[in-house]
Image 1 (cartoon, rainbow, N blue to C red):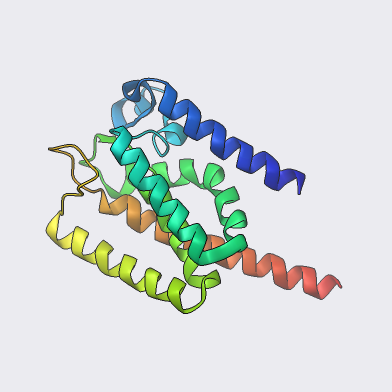
Image 2 (image 1 turned 180 degrees about the horizontal axis):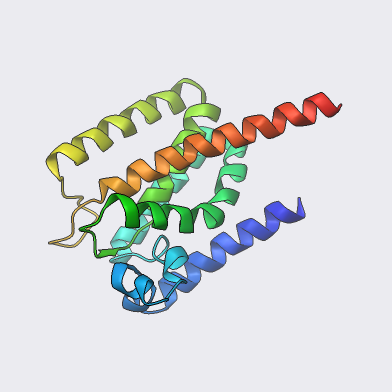
Length: 182
């Protein structure tokens, strides 16, 4: 319980910090990370291009929480831990990407949580998200949440889904181990 509260507090702190400070200092920036600005591995996933972008991402998190119910807490707890892993995934999977801002990659983790914990509606949401991911990867679609000239980074969304799947496997293994000890 203490660990869960600590991780949720870290999530809120990262979101506040990355929003309050200038985006240029917080964004995922390939060359700055290469120069040793490691904090960007975390903060780049939590800063946004605009207030509208932030509001859209938070609305998505809220909608997912409604679908998944209280089980979403454990998924939210993973986000501060998964943020730097997603950032490293972007370094490897999107070599042309120079700047990134947004929570939408980590929303992919929560989508997996909703698909597993949210019943039929959660599974439908998961399928719709995978369809959108495929469409974005093929078309390079522009999100209405993003400023002109900024496109959706489908690699972040893919990384979020993959991290969500790995998290699901880890959570399942923990449950199995707890049951076997009982």
